[in-house]
Image (tube, rainbow, N blue to C red; front, side, top):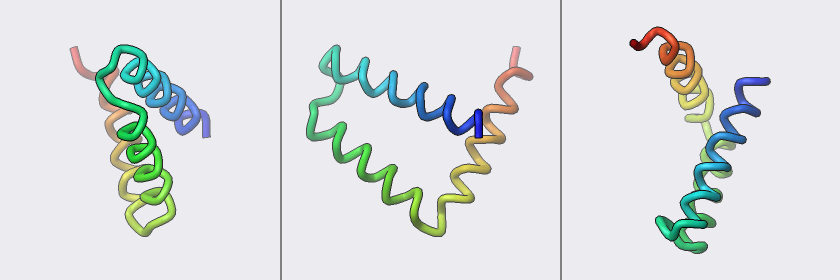
Length: 63
């Protein structure tokens, strides 16, 4: 659960920074958020979650 909250905070912060510096407009941010929301309620959600968990676990091993 902590990993999910941390990832949500990380991605939310990145999205806010992108909005702040004009890399993405409000409409694009809403579409991205809705896409994530609806993807989380589909059958692909477990695959996305396990892929992200594997990536987060692999990051400390990279030098």
